[in-house]
Length: 280
Image (cartoon, rainbow, N blue to C red):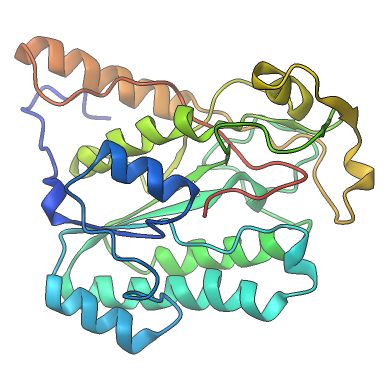
């Protein structure tokens, strides 16, 4: 890996198009990267190939951050058509348009592409077999994204800023975190996209139970079990984030050597959960 000795190549926010800008991650990224083009769903429906192609041809972004997704893990079991259309066909549409204009693609994916029986998954580990329909669509979407020559798949998972449920699973282990912990790392990757030497990055924090994560911000949350989720969920879906930590440290060292420049700091990021999905 290049240690970053060369001067940082910073991506201009004005050269970035963000899908899913009104979603959980999208809102955080818009606050961190206020200059990005983040059209609302009414102006850019990723399931409409004609609308996607027209928008991207008209704006010709240098980088597309694809954060739009169907993320209701339980709901996907009964609303499979919508989940497939958004996650798979939507990604195909964005990837096709990116190829037309020569844009890079940062595709936001999930830790659920792994089976989730052992945890500590590395980028080079084989994904699957998938545990639920949501996971299937996200795995297929990764392959659609990789059709773009300059694509980076970021596997991560996050919760809203405030824990939203009265219970949390004590028997599901993850490396996910809250969205305000994850988003700064994603923003750092956007800014230095041209310096990412990998096709896949795991962006997450340390291994923990979902219950432990919940009680960090909602101490009164009670313990629940993934067996009561109504959908097949993993036991341990935690990610190995050594690659991202090394890259981020190299960027920080290069910034110090340059006496300033782009900041690659911010917390380390994370993966999806049992009672809820990942990015939206």
